[in-house]
Length: 282
View 1: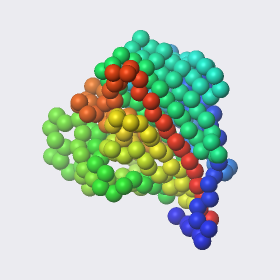
View 2: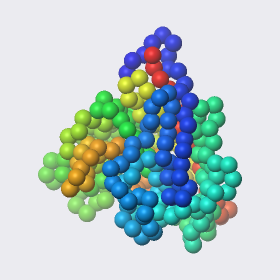
View 3: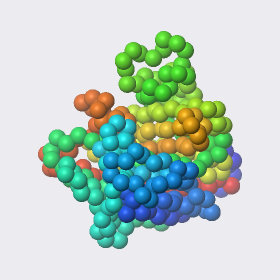
């Protein structure tokens, strides 16, 4: 990171999204830089509900799960209805999700509201894939409890992974000795992790910094990391870095214990806000 006497300067961000294709964020741009990565896999425009996930990049809305069934949730593959300026809605048998995106003095603010029966459990993630250099890093509070997911087992000494466990927990930035805050260079690995009780992180890449913050009262807030350094998919691997603000604490709703999922309260609604801002150091 390069710093100067004047300190970091705010960089106004602009966002674009596609309501007809899962409400997917297609651009997050500011200061001449496009932050969102675009994937190599074709067919995203033709996808139908129930189809396998297509890694087109951008930011996909994952609800009511990330991994599991349906893969990456059930809203990314369906059209959303426009309901006003910056506002889109998707209605499913078990829930209705409304999202409103505004830009306030160059800061992107996404407000969400989920309506469902009280007691309805879900995981939501803003599955954002970023276009980052080999020198980029993810900054989160040191010591944050972090859950490694099973693909990390192959990177650990034999016998390290607890038999039958969906995750292994350790402190950030190096749970179980795996350093995760550095995001390159490509080394042929791919792993997922969830930083627990971590609603605010920063991605630093050269002189640019992106801050993501999640606000939600009474629900578990996490940040998921998908660090694919040319290790996935097995046939034609590529590089993609996911930094994903999350409600819940598990990728798969089926693995979520009593405190690992968001739960709709008696009022029948959960509201949350994702704020994204950018700065540049000189």
